[in-house]
Amino acid sequence: MAAPTQTASCQDIADTLKAMRSIDDKIIYELNLATPTQSFRGQVDPTSHCQGLYQQLNNIYEERGSLIGECLGQSQAKLQELKKLATLKSDDPIALRKLRSEQSRIRELQNESTIEEIIRARSLKVFEERCRQFYKPPR
Image (cartoon, rainbow, N blue to C red; front, side, top):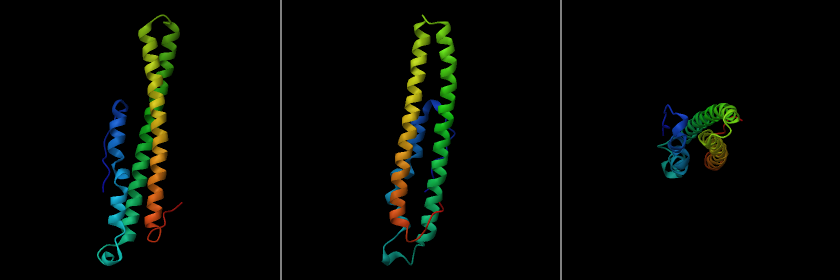
């Protein structure tokens, strides 16, 4: 199962991450295909399927992690600019609203990072349980 590759902007990161997390949502289905029952083992090579699935998972984890990190860096840089602007225009409600909005965006990205860690741990745990007898991923 190929993960969706998209050039994503940081403006629509939630939708992009949702699409990129489809492989994690379907991990049980993918593992059922990779590790068939004893009667179908002759038709499918579970070692190569497990190895391919692990590589897909790793690639998508790297993509999502770098996307979140890149967007977080951009937001933090923008926040610094907005803080400078807010100190110059301390009575401007629009500047303060933009500052609070960017702070909320940073919290959202930090939450996405935490969610990413949880999803990764869950998927890799299921992968390990189902593929351990066929493929041992490098540490």
